[in-house]
Amino acid sequence: MASSTSPPSDAAAVVLDHIAVAVEQWTDAWPCYVHQLGGIWHSGGVNSGFSPAQLSYANGAKVEVLQPWEPEANPFLRRFLDHSGPGPHHLTFKVPDIELVLDRVGDAGFEPVGVRLSDPQWREAFLHPRQATGVVVQVAQAEFEWSSPQPEGFPIATRAPTAALSHVTHAVRDLDTGLALFHLLLSGDITARAIGPGGAWEYVDLAWPGPLAIRLVAPTTDAASTSPLRTWLGDRPGRVHHLAFDLPGPLPTTDGSGRSTTTDPAGDDVPGVISGPGSVLVVAPEENLGTGLVLRTPETR
Image 1 (tube, rainbow, N blue to C red):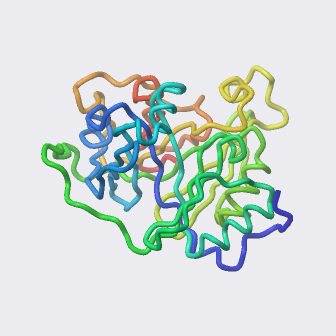
Image 2: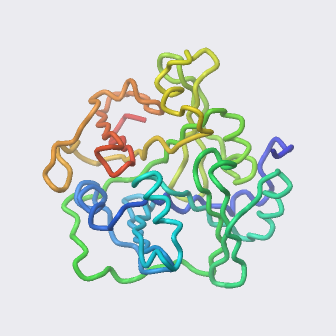
């Protein structure tokens, strides 16, 4: 891993651009991400093996919804869905100089895959989840910000104003390993670090210049082997635990299709949730296409 104790001097130039979630088809995601949370179309289209749709929220943070598209040309997303089902797929970091980042990544012992540097408008590489704490990490150098008209039939959000996507809560087995990647190599600024309520998990908040942040959570050394977070992680190096949204108004009681939401009203037992005067609604992954949500009203972190 990286031997330095602080991010490189050009840290401010790296931005966590979006979190991507995989689904069988876009329309499966619209009830939650558009109707319930107020996502607005940002960009989308078709690519080899997949079709991305980026939704923007009140603070400018983005969720990218991926569906398979002609998977015979590039089966990576089809393989992911067949193996893991729908759920969080990757984190994308925009960088000013991808070759410099790849040099740092290689020096730290990582082996990037899917390296594509020939297109000057979009140069990219990936870190495999086995090395990148259980999640695909994409680093990309983009010539310009991608946007496109919304497709015919895209729904109109029923929530106004929209929610704000505050952070991605990413659970890791070892906090120092997570910090070596997201703080030292990918230049996240540490803004908070503490033990969670009950002492079974600890967290570090990491921020980049853009609106989207990461909260790393890990079992504490004192956590029992049967603690919920250790059990949930199993033998994995990490997993995306949930997306945290801040809502400007009352918590919803149904998703956008009218189904009742499954909740933990307090959120006290959810790693990464710190209760405050506000309200918390926890949506389990199995109730949201494999991606857990924590919906929060003001005053809750």
